[in-house]
Image (cartoon, each protein chain N blue to C red):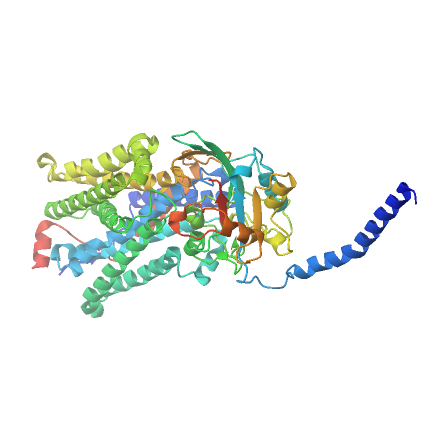
Length: 399
Length: 241
């Protein structure tokens, strides 16, 4: 029997952590307020780059939210007992990361005050409109799933709730990937591959965040965390990272085969400046090669620092990947007149300029802080964390 | 009768006839104009035919649009509104240079309308694609989806707006085909300006009307749609591209 316990939450460290997160949330709100009052011209965004840094953070958090639920799914859907004690934290992070991501997305709207309109007017051909249902449904289903885990009388339904949550999250990430995949207007999008790519990205980003939160929570609350469990999570992270690299490779190889896509590939892979650098150094090296080495290299096996490093790399690489996809995909000029060079007073035919502005960064960081603060508070209020995840305790609980 | 006197009588009777007929002609014009209350009808499909060969080195269409729709910039070309823009093209291999006006293509299958979560992006029955400024939440997904870069986002507070051209900070907008003029039975400002300067590169009309000039020319002369590969059935067609 696994024993769960709230965290103490009275130490100076706990208060300091919440204070820092609270300050970041306030900075994010101040940024949103300024953007709303002044208008978006104060940001780095423009008529060419309409989705900027806030969207990188928002999409990252939303994708990670569905992926972090995987840990619970592995226990309940795929019946792997060692993951069972992690299921509550996995469900909690799924809720809080989604809340953080949606907060960023909503606060960046040109008319955030019209959120009620988005709730009352629907165009059912829009993937955005589907996503509104997918996100709210995800909240409801994961909350139900958590209830079946917490409430002894409901535990018989836990596996079924877990299966529903797992299927829902696959659809949800398909929806997130399709926001871009269904866009025929831009050369970097317009690919059915983006849906499965986003799913494997969610596996990797979600697990990376889970590993870091788990390690931090157990270390700071003085609980035992077994090496065997961490080793297992690390190897799984490696598999997910490899899968992301595979899908990225197939995406680019497909484009490289298609003549009309050569220019966008040249931009992304060769001469796209900051986007090319972020692709090779951020996405491939830091987000792919380095974590694989840190997880699988014999010298690094069993090292907690190596695992934490690998997870951090996956997060940094993931942000770089979304920056390249979202912002790079818009910066590349639309090919309205193939075979012609194009120019105009409003920047047709040239790579659109963009630099992240302070309000955008503050809003994005505020969303991350909101997700973490909600997690920290929930850990204090409800017994999400097992008292011990020492290897010996896990074996006895699994038996 | 002296020649002078004869000429005077001729001019005089012509003027009298004109004065008598003009109100009648004006009446016909008023009868043909749709009343402001009448709903847009699918019997019509408004469109443009742009002959690039006649498009001269000017931007009267752009300034007429800005004037008609009250689009005053803030001196920030990255974020200022543009509903129509002059685009210069040069063939990469031959160097052949052309220029053309580019604006919302008023697609029959508009991607901006498909992706809009609230239905703020919509297409009128007569084919004009518009944004309902009251339910646009400013998500900019339509800007992402437009293959022509035709939409802009209102990045800052507006002043000096035209009463019949609603706009709003934090919402998306694009060429309305001067819907306020079309509903009065007039042509879009860009077309009027282009014709006034004698270029006549732009022709406005009802694509569905067999008797219209635009229909006749599209039937008898070659023309093309931009990004025809996307099969969006644009309301704006080009010649000489």
